[in-house]
Length: 115
Image 1 (tube, rainbow, N blue to C red):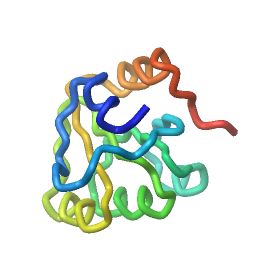
Image 2 (image 1 turned 45 degrees about the horizontal axis):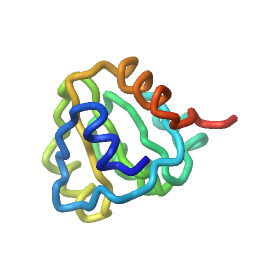
Image 3 (image 1 turned 90 degrees about the vertical axis):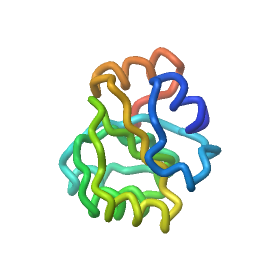
Image 4 (image 1 turned 180 degrees about the vertical axis):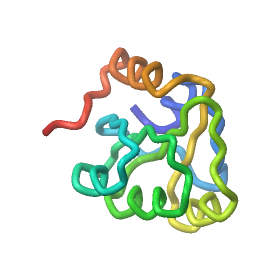
């Protein structure tokens, strides 16, 4: 699944339209503890989090994730979005809960993070 397909699947808005949505999603993950995500992040991951500060983008870029997904219509700060654009990281937001987002990813065949 590509990021644009995920956006459609979860009815999301792309908060970084300057960034392409053609990255391949290899797995999904939900966590809000940045140090944990740093240790478990993977290339191509779609990361669902309620965190919106600048370090979210740094962690996502460090792991070469496909995108960051914000549940419940959460908006990211302008500074964080500007950093996402400069780093080529797509940030999506949707009205769905984190639980609903992960359920849809799983139902579409996207695996969770293998441990």
